Amino acid sequence: MNELRLLPNERVILTADSDSLTLTTHRVRQEIRETGYVAIRSAMLDEICFCEYVRESKPFLLTSALLIAVLTLIAAGRYPAGTSYLVLAAGLSVAGVALVAWLATRRAFLNLATAAGSIPIRVRQMKYEDLEDFISELEQAKNNRFLLRTISFG
Image (cartoon, rainbow, N blue to C red; front, side, top):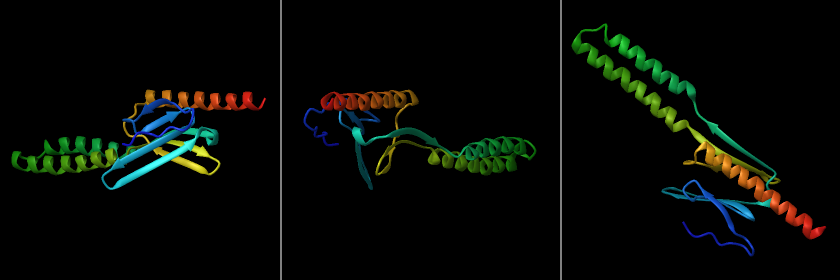
């Protein structure tokens, strides 16, 4: 990734999500470059009015995978040796597909709302505790910007 060009009097407060997400004294910026996908999202702290963390998945897929695996193990015990291997292979393959589908549907976003709308920032490798820290730092930086503006105009 290219190094972030800082604005006058701007400094980096925190980087996260493998350095793709940057919080500075003036803005939040995400830059992602992957094969077939490039995204740069940026919002000035003065414009951010709401922040939320959303994590989504399809738990019925995980439940289905577990249920199919258990039923396969039970059913395989009721067949002769040669047939039980086929039952095991087929059942566990279906359970594996359901598990992979569950993993593929898991998504996590940090949504930043501005007057122009919501900016979904995909967070891929951040732990929940790191997201809490990032949101706290964002709130503190936003508050500092507000206080700086209040003192300047006061």
